[in-house]
Image 1 (cartoon, helix red, strand yellow):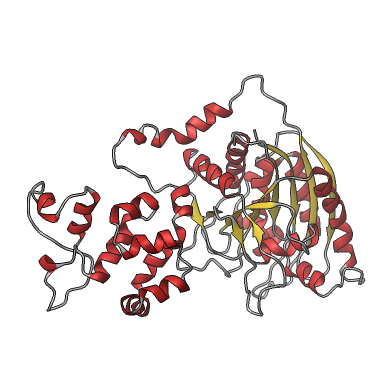
Image 2: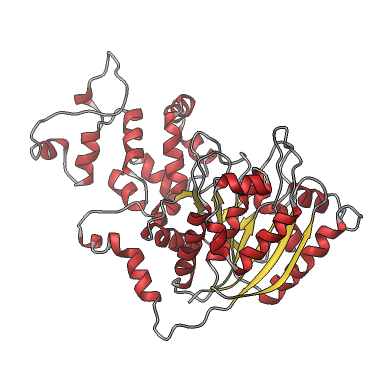
Length: 428
């Protein structure tokens, strides 16, 4: 079974990454940062966790306000470095533990946390700024990550209490994962700071010290605070420290503090903290019981013939072909597909199997592969195939055979109306 070896809390201010990139670790202004990071680097080297469950907030880089979620879990197997305006940092991408991500996602949903999930998104300084100071990366990162992006920029945002409860559910999720992984929980975000408005530059070191003490010894006290109270004490952007409560909730009630430090160089209080888990083994193995709880909503669905739930696993497997078909909503992509599909297949790096499925209009085969139906519907609209033709193909029937099972013999699609359309002559 997987186990949580401890938790780290660390600021993610971009000054950390800037100092790494410009080799300023020994300069007076930056040296205290790296002195406070040294015990964390040593702890990671000693513990050698397989995976970091990494909690951060994006800074309007990969997540924009056209769709902004509270808790967004990465389920990818790789994450690149984001371009935040001046070009991406010269760092390698980092591996993701997709299987653990899926398990955690299923578990958190079963515990009634309404999660969002992301793939194919680069990550910004919220993750890579402290990572580049904590771990060697020249030959590739020595760990995988499971990233959790917490939406703390557009209000309303999750409460401190909700974050703590999420951490408790996260512990159950990780500890019920069947493979033997060592997992460290990393929570990032600056302690007191404000970067906008006339209050820009606000800091409160006294509150930072009190917050860290409560986080270690009495986190329940912090869960009673409102976002306005966090902002009053630590600045509005400083209220992102609610993410620390996810980490703390994932640990045992009693922890050992191995390290704590604090430095305020300019705009953001930089805190570092190491907590080691003191969880005791339960004489009753609850992990299988919890895995069944996670699978409860879909238990028995495998008995339904010809039914394929679009799970996180299927979403990951079919992501490339689904992305290709989704782009058919773009007029230019549609035109290029109709004119020269082979060139577009090559540009999208589709596998030979994925190309064959589209070439042959293998509707049922695409479902088996991991394509979601509503993208088949879009493909049908582009090539002039009605929904009814696709439904019939699902059952291995001709349109005429399928229509005999319907109350009304009609055809339709999601394509816009054209005066020359003749849906009844759509291709099979």
